[in-house]
Amino acid sequence: QVQLVESGGGLVQPGGSLRLSCAASGSIFGILAMDWYRQAPGKQREWVAGISRAGSTNYADSVRGRFTISRENAVDTVFLQMNRLKFEDTAVYYCSTLNGEYWGQGTQVIVSS
Image 1 (cartoon, rainbow, N blue to C red):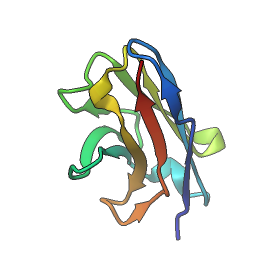
Image 2: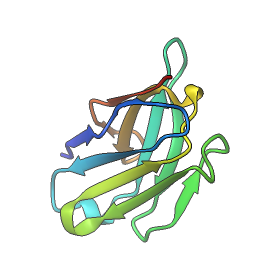
Image 3: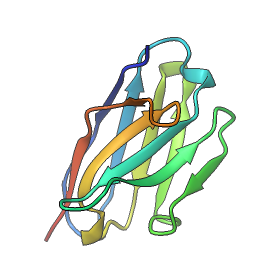
């Protein structure tokens, strides 16, 4: 059983930055690949970024160069650093693992002037 808890969302102006965190329960975190997804109002959930247990990363084209996913296994946490935020980044952001078997409750990000 894995429990995921996201935090760090909020209201930010275009061009600003936010750092999301996803804390995972259980000592197995270090062997899990982790992903961030987001769901904008009226849209389907989309994959944003992923990080392997070894630290290899991958990004959706829409965020590559602006977002950075990282992990700190010592504290069972994965991060999503979001820079140069755009209006279209507004969404609820979720972390997930085990190919979507486990999800957090989500954290809201609103990009607005």
